[in-house]
Length: 328
Image 1: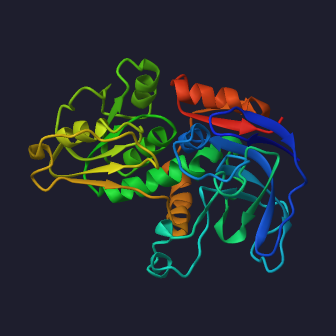
Image 2: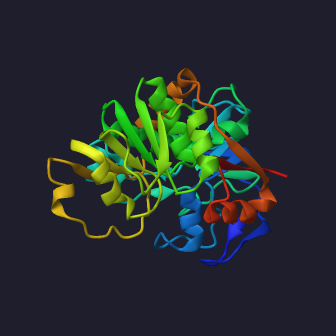
């Protein structure tokens, strides 16, 4: 098998040949057909997340076909299309796992961070965290649902049921969740980097009621806002945009420091909260909802060996929608 491997923080991914994937007990081996490129992959490569396992194969929006089942694995068929996301395994016995909050597990494993991911032609995953995907839809179009969609869905649920929803940052997750929110009947207000006309045009085409720069206020106070961009200065901006009792949800695994701001922007029972990872229940619910909502992902395909170019495009803001790697 071939993989794009990170060997040192801040360095380029390197094309390497590795032994073919072997499914151990409780694992599934997968022939990768597509893998989305998430901003979290960029955080891994750039060293924003502490203590990665190196060398590591990034990638946690994996779509592929089951090629082998390890001992004790049931419920999958050889050749079945499946997906793998960021949460790769949990301990099942810490207090958070026992409370049904496995996203906060004390001893988790993460795909593409502490265990090898999908920037490869093959992958191995814990069978408990492998999701049947059915056969509908193009593999590359489905891949962004495995993290951008899943974390976006958890963020949307945590934002509450308010009608007026703001989205700060409009990349892979934002363009998926806008479609879900519109399907739910919400009014969506999108904030992009000032002057990002490509992202703004995409937001309008997907049904955003209002689109503007992140330095602007919406025409009406929001019930809630989700921040997808990893920019701490957006937190006080979003607080100013939500009404009393409103909620600001920070969806990223990493964000730059949040600057100080006047207490009056928080007062009025406004809330700021973060989203950490996701649960299998989140995945089960969202993957059932996605086809009902008619989600159409806007993707740019890259060859697997062009993974560095995809990361550079994401880092520089040249990408609109989602990037997806396809094996050469």
